[in-house]
Image (tube, rainbow, N blue to C red; front, side, top):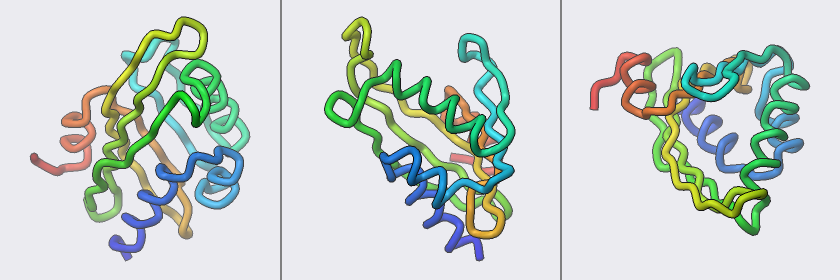
Amino acid sequence: MSEGDVEIVRQAFANRALQETAKTYWHPEIEYVEDPRFPGAASYAGREAVVRCWLDYLEAMGDDKTTTVTVEDVFDAGERQVALVRFQGRATGSGIPFDHLWGYVVQVMDGQLAYIRAYHEPAEALEAAGISE
């Protein structure tokens, strides 16, 4: 089942249409936890709360014309997966360029993402899932 979960995680992060992603790939009771280094870091419970959070990200990062999202790898850690996802672009308000590889520990339940924990440092996500580089 983990191999299928890896593909679900890959597709969920690769899909750029947020509402479609949420409906298709996010469990209704999804929990999303931001990295504590993120300004105002919080956790969000439920699909609608997570969508609102990610809409805020998109507002700051920009749209498909100014931002690219690349799933660089997805690792299988058994019950959880680790996605390494690169975000590149120019911030909407300032035009400042950004390029960062994030790590996400993800748990799939009933074919949908039920838990996502963001890590500013991908190595920390791998470590949290018990994977050594």
